[in-house]
Length: 240
Image (cartoon, rainbow, N blue to C red; front, side, top):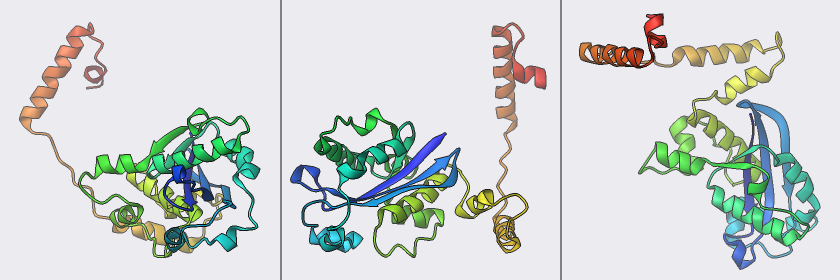
């Protein structure tokens, strides 16, 4: 399974108001493991960056003046994401801007949905944690992910943080375990290994909840019903 964790930075909040993408950051997960494959560009939006946006991401109009335009990188970008599942936090925002840029490029490009599936981690977080704050900073705090280096937003940095949040939120490994997976066999740094093992061993033991006698009886009754309906082919009865 190939997934692309994606984030963008923009000149403002609304593509309908003429705002543009100024940074795209993507990182790749293969079978839930982080790879070294990246796609990262800064873009010249051919317009001023709103002052409020600069306060968020620090990307000024002057800094972007000599950068390529979206049309210059569009084919490479689409080639990177095509066939993958895009994992985005608040996907309508980023996908809306990307579709706007693809339309402006006027090169026969289709919409993002024509190239890949999209998974919105904000929707996922709201289902898992209803009534709570579910922005990226709040999720980092909830899942114990260090984001102290995130003084300003940045597309590639936020994509890397989102990858950790997504893996934690869906029961995957943390960044420490990713480092071990990426290391060649026999070449894992002993210090890193010791630190990882110490973290694992320090975690509280999982609580085991046993079923009651009534629940056991109800379960056995249900298995008997399944066994009867299937002509004696209930797998759980044969294992027992």
